[in-house]
Image 1 (cartoon, rainbow, N blue to C red):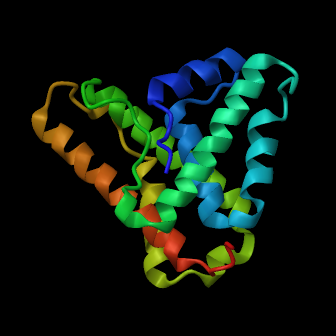
Image 2: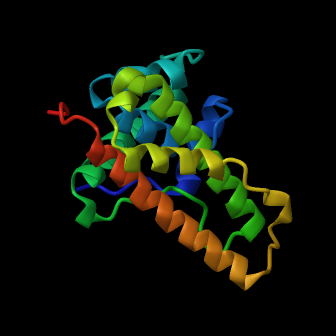
Length: 181
């Protein structure tokens, strides 16, 4: 098993290609694509992320390679929850309000990726998985301006929310039809 690239490494690569998407959102987009329909996830990822990029640019090639690696690693993590699927967010030492914003971005990216790949698969989801997807949608409404950067209780709540999202993604992934081979 490989490890996911570091948050700052992805941030630098995305920025270097001129993409207007951050590491949390791109990670979530890929997670959503995989959970929605693994068979089309790579094709959709490349279409969504590299549509306006020059494929011959070295920075684009490097970023594409990194995101392909990320795709494979996310799938591996989702296939074996013991391995420790985790969200890609800034380090814990980042201010709580910035971390909250990245959590919202993560939720938005996941919903977008899932939405463009799932098509009618969402109709096949259990009630629990559908409620979980609705919860993720609710989290996009988090008032990040109300988050106190220094409040320890809010930091703990953000950690709990992150854990909920981690389990939610695995729940949705496991719930959909198993045609991922």
